[in-house]
Length: 350
Image (cartoon, rainbow, N blue to C red; front, side, top):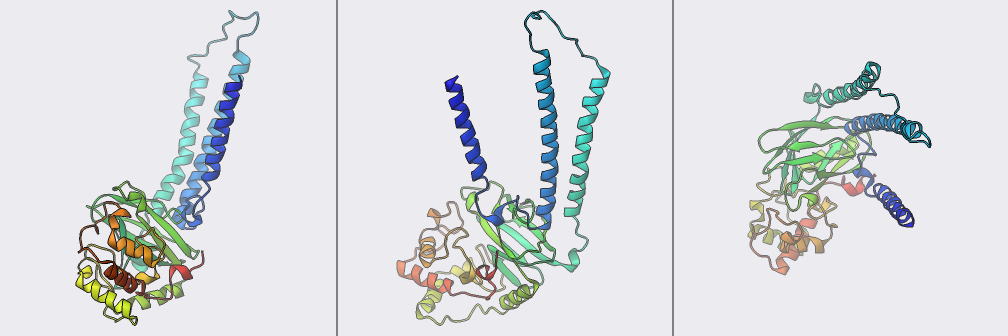
């Protein structure tokens, strides 16, 4: 008995700990704190399905308790056999109709939400962004705006932003939990969805499809700003001069080393499409290195010298000459000074 009680306490403590830890993490990385139209629709369905499951659980437990208390073997009635109910048409009708009703209650709003979230009737009037998933980074092309970005996607609040999603290699999945549900990015076809939020903030995105050894490190951000700030950001991005010479001598050396090592063979600065690597426009405005590290020069140098140790299986490893410590330091200084706009993730209130 004491052993059983000990196991029960351990299970209770572990369950409580798991429940508490489930609430940890970034606020804008939770589907349970919706801040977008799509996420709110999903949350409504989660609440409805949870209520239905609780209803079924309570009914089943009530029946279980009634059967246990009413039909348990009693003293002096060891040979008693209760009335058998097989073939009872009333009971069979009840437990056939009730599940059908529950399925209909859940199916109607689910189908309605599915068609609502697939609605593209206002697509021509809104902002459109092409999203390309790569191992292990994200590229964003603002259609008609001549803006290319990577890792950070800026969107205006109060406007439906339509996304065309595709992959350059394997199947990935685009997911910003606080804003909308998941959508696969496939190499052979374009999937579509939209983001819409009324709240400014930095929302964290993840790849939700196992795609390789660094799948869990394939992070990105959606930065929602006011329409006025978004217009300012668009103007700033369109006026970026990729040939602009850095003011700092170290950064000037870094720009030269960047060109000598043919980094532009894979990357781009400005509105030119990237070749095979992330677009580096406004790199100095980003809040992470390689999407996951603190935005320090030391981390960027570490990434440039040995990217494989940070993101195993990434496409950057082995695709450029081995950098000296001095060149890596200079290039890092150059990249950290690539600032495109005053509208940055740091300037946005969460």
